[in-house]
Length: 174
Image (spheres, rainbow, N blue to C red):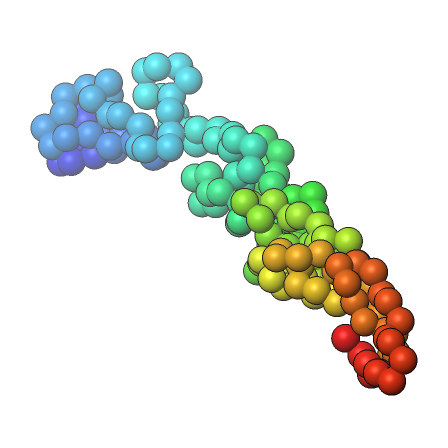
């Protein structure tokens, strides 16, 4: 008999669906189920698709499990990318090919979103503390120093304290 056939009562018969055999097979037991299929009865009477259950943070694509995109999660047994959603602190829509990015006023640090320092803010999708900038009315550089309230005209700054300019001197701003 040809490949994918076996001899039965003197005739060559095709192996059951989703199974194959070597050329010259003489009995049905020579047929074996294709990858991704199995025979529950053990005698290759019918090969049925194996049930694939994806782990947490994976989803099913063409019979195989793939990881959810970066910074997104899914529950065990997810069957489509639509089951992936952005992790806590991230926004986006993995099903629409939108990356999961940090929310506004946070930045990416070590795989999680960290809050910008006090009196500073950042736009959605920020990836470093340097993306945080001091809010209006504050001065400094988040990451290297804290944001402190800016001194008004006619004053100067010493540390975090604003002092009045001396007689005969003036400071328009710091």
